[in-house]
Length: 344
Ligand code: PHE
Image (cartoon, rainbow, N blue to C red; front, side, top):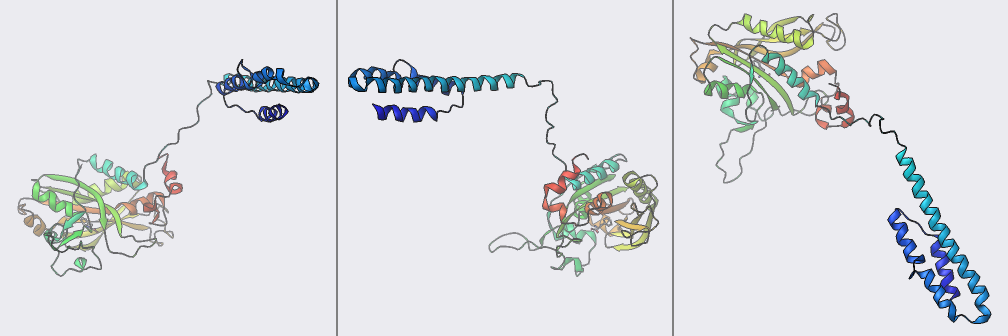
């Protein structure tokens, strides 16, 4: 009997409850009619008369302790409940964790937005392409170095596969131009955004993939002046109304004449800084009049139609807007980097 009381004493001292229900089941376990402590009172009859006094006292102590402990726990719950009721329900809630859009998506969307205001619509094409659409129809000579494995990722043909030999990852979004020109009739006024791949060693300044937005406009009487005007409009919308542009002669197989466009450095405002290497200008895109050979190879009469095209790197524009020093940050998905664009 004594041992039983001692064991129960220990249990009662360590009694814990997480909820009012648990507390009630403890009360039932120990103190209800058939509870463990109550039934000890039943057994008390069999205790030897000389021990009755001592055991009786002991038993009463146990009962009191159990009642007290249960009461204590109950008070605790009630206090907690009261505290919960006292909470200020009019308090503004904790801020919701906002997701952020990727800086490259932000810039891409902005480019699209600007050109859509002057009539351009968006077209996309496959990233895995064939030689014809990436090079052939764009007037690249058969031995052009861009076709070299050093510059272009080719998709290897597996044994037994029917795939043609010249499947590759597109190196520029100009491939979408050829797809559009062969399937649509002028006037054509499209923007082709997308990811492109080049076989480059990955560093802070180069990556094996990046993003471009290409523009193409084909109609009767499209001139170089139209191209210049569209690009000036873009530069001012993107980098601010004081932005100036300059076009430098350049070469691309698919445009003639071709040019590269610089904008007045938006970091120093054109006075010269480290970013523009003290020149006051930064290059942002390539452009030109679509070469008649390209129009013809896509089935468009080059005597009736002319067109312009331009292509820019989204990372380049994002760098100018947000000054991201290391290109790799764009593809690492480090939340500390991405979170900075939450409010954009
Ligand atoms: N495709 C060229 C590049 O990847 C850019 C370009 C597009 C140039 C259209 C002229 C016209 O560099």
